[in-house]
Length: 115
Image (tube, rainbow, N blue to C red):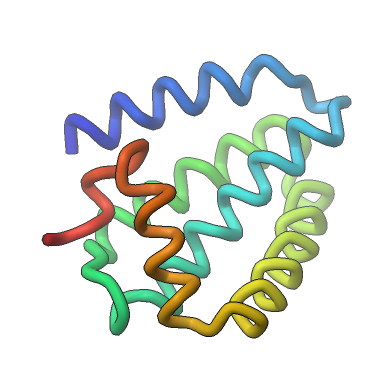
């Protein structure tokens, strides 16, 4: 859990460089929330996921975005990102997408993945 806290601190600091008025910053936070949600919902059968840690991370990222932009505006962006990721998963295939996400996210979020 300590590593995930460090990753979240670093991620939050970089995300705070943008403001609530910065659509790119909000989209980045929303994309992370959507990616973590897809990882939690679609990947446990394909890569080892600690669902509890992933849910904590998901909640933290969502709350950060909501604090930045407000619930309704932020959730609209999250839904758009979820649709984009769904298309990405359909194009790539679930197992391949999950393996790719593991290789991308294993370093910043090591506690999400089980050996």
